[in-house]
Structures are given as structure tokens and as C-alpha cells.
Length: 144
Image (tube, rainbow, N blue to C red; front, side, top):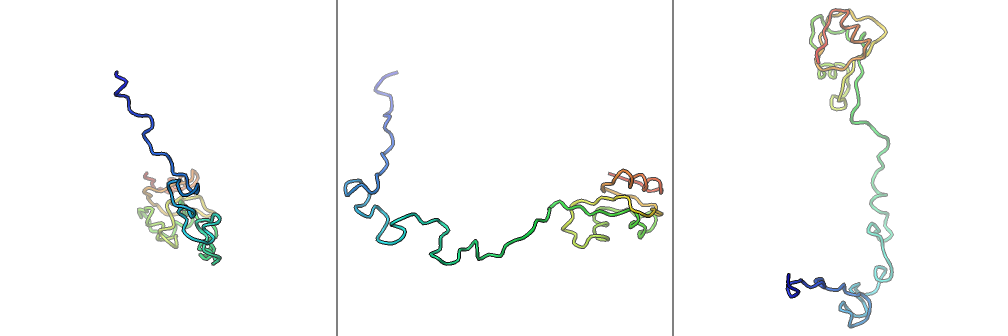
């Protein structure tokens, strides 16, 4: 190691001192701020629009919250509308009971007040324990 090979510590240019006279390196009396006006004299926030109603106040307000992962719940007594031996998937139940298909991500079958009288097979649908027992008791099958 040789002392002549050590790089200079002062490798960056010093920051220009704005607003310190003619010889400061940046402008003279205006210091890069242009001529007269509000922006010269004090700070103006980035979203300020000169007294006009700002953009974030002009746009309509979005109220409420709707979950992206909404669940369509189907009770077992609603399933009696299908024929015996029907193979039901998530999409089939959404088309039958959901108003808007894109709204629902999951389908869950829950136990209803009535009895399930049909033998149905389900593919890729979530069940409550009591609803699953009811489907199996009626002769249906549950596939995951």
C-alpha cells in the first residue's frame, strides 16, 4: 500500500449555497427562483392550484367498502331445485344463486331449515360440517 495511491477524500463537489449573494455559485439576488410572486416568497404545497378547488376535492367520494373475497352462501334446502345426480361446481352454483358472477370468489354450502332430498355431487365447494353430513346422508358425494 502506497500513500500516493489513496483516492482523495474530497471526491464530491460542495453543495451550492443558494441565496448567499452574487459569488455563491447559483444566481444572484433571485437564487434560481425566478422573479416576483408567491412561489418566490414562501413555500406552496405541490397540490395547491392557486385558490381553485383542488383536484382531490373535485372528484366524487367513494363511500363504503366491498370485500374482494366475498362468499356466496347457499343453504341445503335451496339445492332441491337441481335434478338427482347433478354434478355441481362453483360456477354452476354462482350462476344459479349469485346475481353477479365476478363478485363471488368462494361458494359455501350451509345447512338450511329444510331437508335435502336430492342426490347431488359437489366439486371444489366449501361446506359447513352439518351441511356436509346432510349431503352425505342424502346419498350425495363431496369432492375436493
